[in-house]
Image 1 (tube, rainbow, N blue to C red):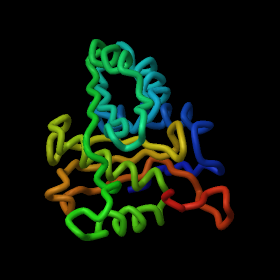
Image 2: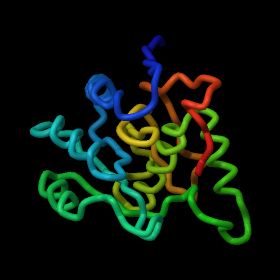
Image 3: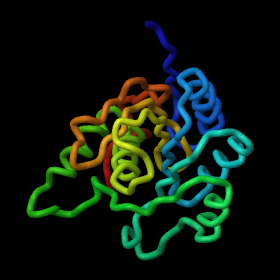
Image 4: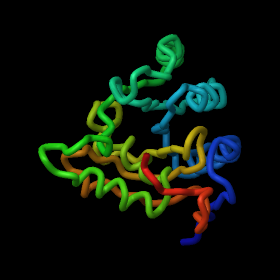
Length: 192
């Protein structure tokens, strides 16, 4: 089997329109009806919701958890707008952002390992488990996950969902697109 992967020369929201187009194309080709989408401030969620208006695609939007920062940047009114349109918004625990969970740094090690493939891949894995843990998607369901690097969307994958308690059952089947990582400061993998 042969399939196209798109590599972006830059990270971030400049890639959002092309990611959206690629997600639509792959979703139709694979008959995938749910898109799990990271959205911190709501811009990406709004863009995707408008693009999928009138389709049978359901978005599962995953913003930051409450308490991650002093203020929460995702607009409360957007939660209602998205839900009225048939989408879900889930403010679950960010699994790789737990300080010394039960005295271990395992989540941080996992996050850093996934960042070898790029920040967006790390976030895709995290939001799939968060959505599954929250009952928004089913374990074993094939979904498309979309994330980005410091805003917007620049990464998308086709995956089989699994909850965090069974993370070894999560499978990334296809990388639809991601930034091409280079060896300079423009794509720093510093998690801070």
